[in-house]
Length: 121
Image (cartoon, rainbow, N blue to C red; front, side, top):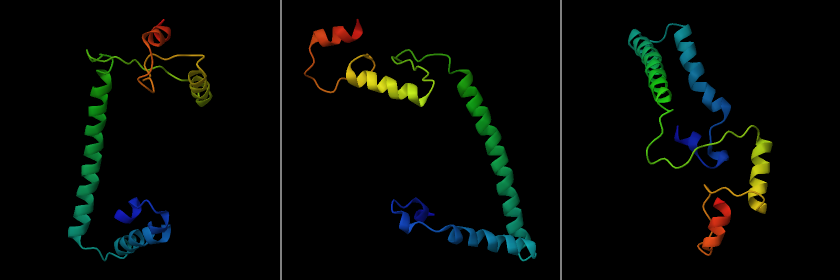
């Protein structure tokens, strides 16, 4: 498992290395070489996965049903950007100074009060 997470792609397992254990399990199941205990463990794992998925869906539903309520200390309201082109143009406008976003932090502490007033007005 840890090899899959390696930063160096050459250290990660190949697709053949990954598929071999699954093929071995498949062949054991196909030829009834897996004992009942292992099969029962697989069934329990499948049931747990299904139950977990249902509970996770319920948690997400509850989370999103309450998401319209804002946290009292929240200060940022997100805006929908329709396309990546829209994001690109927005970032270009911000970099060139054509548009100012008061939610963005200034790069340095050298700004004056008038700079802040220009951004907010």
